[in-house]
Every structure is written in structure tokens, then in C-alpha cells.
Length: 343
Figure 1 (tube, helix red, strand yellow):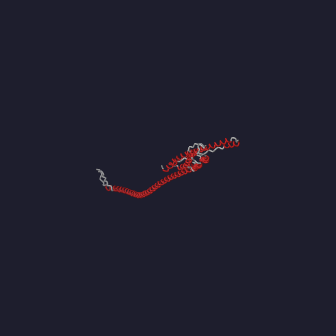
Figure 2 (cartoon, rainbow, N blue to C red):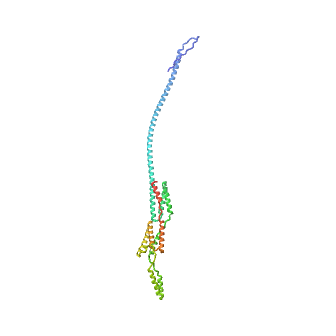
Figure 3 (cartoon, rainbow, N blue to C red):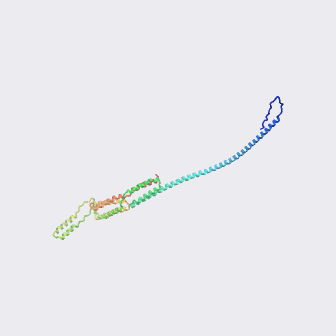
């Protein structure tokens, strides 16, 4: 862009002559214009160079930005792929963890169930052993072992079982048990005494003291022989007739042969009671002793001391049979059944 030439008009002076200075001024103006154009051109060139450098820098930055954006996009895609793989692995791990927890719970329940089954089997077996041996020691040992196993398991759902075991142990320890050997000795004494018990309709034995006295007197004196003979005949006549009171009519009809079998039957009942006591069949022992007591009161002489002693001994045996019954562990078995059912 070229500057317009300026025209300098000199003021008119009335007295000085006019000198033409146009070429000089035009030259000065041309020089000034050329200098200005050069400067302007130089400035424009600098601006163009600066713009070119900025454009080149901007292109380089744009290229670098595109490369960076491409890398960022690739990185984002790779990150998304990794995240998808990670999420898949996380879901797989979560599934495996769920399965593992279910497996652990199943194993825990299975272990508890096995523990309950083992404890119940041990308690029932110990109860049978106690019934066979007549001792509560096997049952107490089984309950103590069960309590220790439950303490080691440390499961809250087994706490009612532990309390039930404690109650049963306290009840067993407080129960007084009868002495089985002493009962067996009493039964043996009753069996031995059965042969000496008098039958209710038995004929009393005549005393030999009077006849001995008569013999001695007959040897000493002969004058009173007829008197002593009359006394002896009177005694024999009186012995032919016997008056006694028998409560049960069946006892009066017994013959001597039946009396023998009656004693043997009584002894068999007592021996059966002894076998039942050894085999811990308390109901059978109670039944046999009841039958023996009925037979003793019906067919034997109740006024005899031996019969009274045998009857008293039978009553003691029947009373002591209640102490032979072992305490049951129903609380423990019920608690085990409840825990096994999961209630």
C-alpha cells in the first residue's frame, strides 16, 4: 500500500519571488515512502515468518495431538477390554466365592450332623451297656465325652444339647442305685429257705421228749406201767384228730407229692428272678417275685417264723427293685433330635 504524496504549499509573500521546489519535495517524499515501504515490507515478512512458524508449530502440535488422541483411544480401548476381562474375572471369583461359602456351610452342617449322630449313637450304646451291667458309669462316661465334643465344636445351635446333657448328668449322679450282689445273696437265701418252709396243711411233728421221759420212767419203775400206758394211748388217740385253721381252701387240698412240686415251683420262680436280675430284666424279676409272694402267702403257713422271714425278705426285694431302674437320658435324646432337625 503506497502513501499518498502530500503537497506543501508555501505561503505567499508579497515581497519574495516564487521558487519552484516540487521535484525536491517529491524526491523527499519518495524516499520517505520507500523507507516506509521497506520497513513495512520487512515487518510484513517478519509477520509472515512468524505466522509460518506458528502454523508449522500448530501443525506439529495437531499431528502430535492426533497421535496422542490415537494413543489415548487405543489405551481407552485396551483399558475397556481389560476392565471387561477384570469384571468377568470378578464375577467368576464372586461365583466361586459363593460356591465356596455354600460348600463350607454344607461341610459345617454335615460335620454338625455327623457329630450329632455320633453322640446319639454313643449315648444309646452306653445306655444299653448300663442296663446290662447295672452300672451308670458307661452312661456317665458317654455323656462327659459328648459334652467335651460339643465344647470343641463351639456351635451356638448345640447349646441346648449341652444344657440337656448337664441336666441328665446331674440327675444320674443324684440317683441312688441298689446293690445287685446283695439282692442276689438274698435270693440265694430264699432258695435255700424254700425247703424249710412249712406247708399250711402240714402235720406237726410229735415231740420225742415225752416218750423218752416215759421210757426213762418205765425203766426206773414198773408199778405205774399201766398209768403210763394209758397216757401214751391217750396221746396217740388225740394225735389222730387235728383241728387247724387254713385261710385258703386250695392249701388244704394239697397232697404230700403236690407239696414237693409246690416247693420246687417256688424255687424255680426265685431262680428265674435271679436270672432276670443278672440279665437286667427288671419287669421279669418283678413278675417272678410277685408270683413267689402270692404262692408263699397262699400255700405256706403264715404263722411260722420262717414263712414270715421269707415274706419280709420278698417285700424288701420288691422294694429294692425300684432302685435298680437306671435313670433315662430322655432330655439329651430329645435335644439331639431337635438339633438334628434344625429347629
